[in-house]
Length: 233
Image (cartoon, rainbow, N blue to C red; front, top):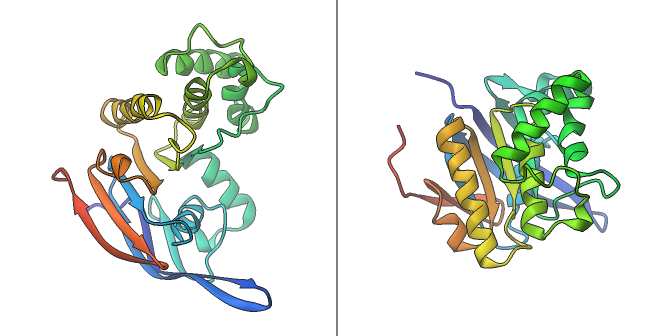
């Protein structure tokens, strides 16, 4: 039996708030198979973004384990975690997080530059990725010259730059109108089907959740249940 590409085991996260402990995650057990297109849905404050931060190795749990591609990231030091995150995980954010002074090409190249990819190779791959997301003719445009949907496409291309196995998206359609949001979801689905990428989406929007193959319901730091919209292979 193959190991899941993502697994959390009895995951807990507690923050201090006003001098008091605030338990945000309360023992989360989750398995995500390679190639899944899934969403975690819940109200604001339910802990779903905290869970995504744990899966993305942006924060460490108070207790429990996170496994990425069979690696227990709790046992890695900070440099090893940063390396794993740069190689295995791509992030797509609600507010795009593009560098304003860089054009689309530069924004997509940035993670590759951090990873030590040569200038020529990263330039070539960035052009290919911008073409993949339909922005081949906008490579020299800065974020301020792009629409919200175009900025999100640049962010998706950037997330793909180091060819990660896992793509994590936090409310990626939250700042987009419904038509543009639908176009972005269709783009992600195409990347899932054609490139075999694993997608974990965080959302509070039922319309987004119902476009995935599996929807996890999250509330008050725990998984309440799940729905499958398509049989997983």
